[in-house]
Image (cartoon, rainbow, N blue to C red):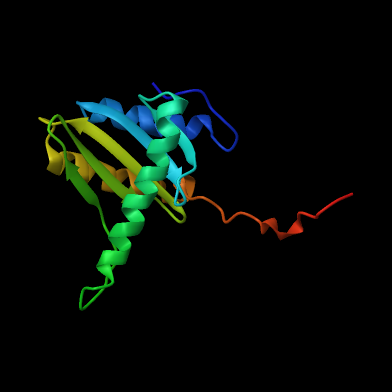
Length: 143
């Protein structure tokens, strides 16, 4: 089940992650974060684990985008799949300014995970998007 909500999180996003985990048997955890790594919602992880993972997922997606630029026809990054000894990790952009990471058991069908992740992002991208934050320059030095 999704973890406690923090500022900027909504029950609707939690429902989407819960639904994904029910459809994709073997889902271990899911992190939905802004593209700079701030966690918006998570499933299967407490906040202390989700926060650094959100930052790491952001770094993975940023690195993959940088590598894509070296292709003759850079078309961006669709999805990153990383295989670990006991789980697989899928990372994808999730609407404007957002990303999603899904970890599954090693035996879970990777093609099905990719399909379901793509379907989730396509059908709900406006709800997954993260608005650009206001400029912090309004902060002043003193009273």
